[in-house]
Image (cartoon, rainbow, N blue to C red; front, side, top):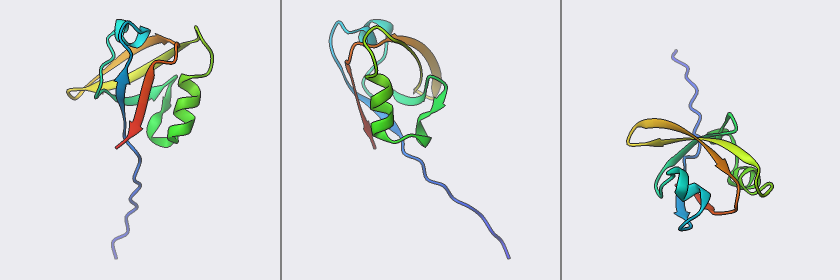
Length: 88
């Protein structure tokens, strides 16, 4: 008998970035896939948990890893409430 385990995890993408925001200034883009937020794998977090981290406190710095065109990139984002994230 063959046994296997399948675990599905959500994929989160940035769907909106305010013009002149800190996210825009550091180079995040609509369509970027979130991989990690402050070292936490986003696929193991709910959308509300991710939003809570990204909207936790003004001027707090958050480390974000994204995937764009199959390349993972890291950024430091100073929070200012400008990211909209959806799961799809």
